[in-house]
Image (spheres, rainbow, N blue to C red):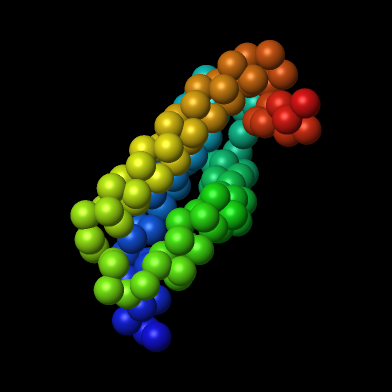
Length: 123
């Protein structure tokens, strides 16, 4: 079971790194963009970034649920086959597209409301 868990984690790693990097970069860019209005203390910045990483880990858990379910339901003999690589590649592409679309949307949402996505963004 340990080998299977490490296999699933290895398959999630590229999107995990992309997701956390993109979200952290977005937070830093928005902070730099409005630093004059915010005037944050260095420890407040670190605390906010760490809290953001915590939220990102929770979001990533839900975001990757379809891929994890797919990997758990896929018979072991089919792991790494051409069809599996194609389906995983399609999922990676769709996930990356959604994440980039979300990042661009947050940039414009920040322009309008000076906040990250919230219930207004969902509406």
